[in-house]
Amino acid sequence: MPYQNPMPERRTRGKESTGLQSLVQVEKITQIAVILPCAVCIGWLGGMWLDRYFHQQWMTLTGFVLGCVAGMTSAIKLAISLVNEPKKKPGESGPKGGANAP
Image (cartoon, rainbow, N blue to C red; front, side):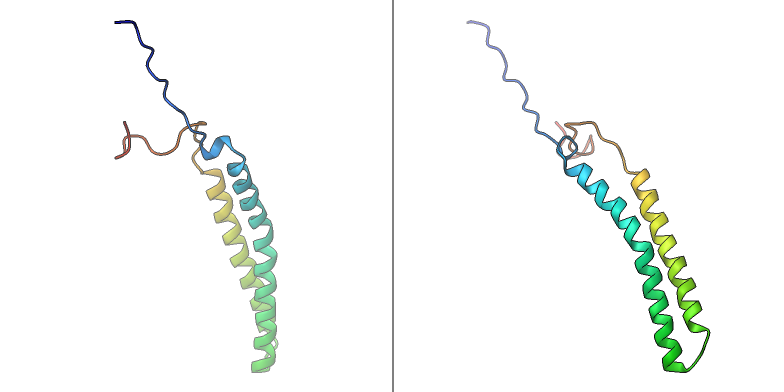
């Protein structure tokens, strides 16, 4: 019987080899840049509304400070998750040793 070459394994392109992973990272960086000013504005406007509703003078500043704290906390969490994201090699599709592993 003649020698038959085995069929080579087909390697599918993973997300990393396409531009999708790059677009996801750009979206996360953009989200970091947008979330801080939005949180500050929401806190400031909420404080102004509370000032007018309760006829006080200190709630605008408190809303501004709380918006700053919330925005910074959220931006730092997003930055940490972006840095700690696992790096996969191209062609690697998921965790090894799972139920679908050969």
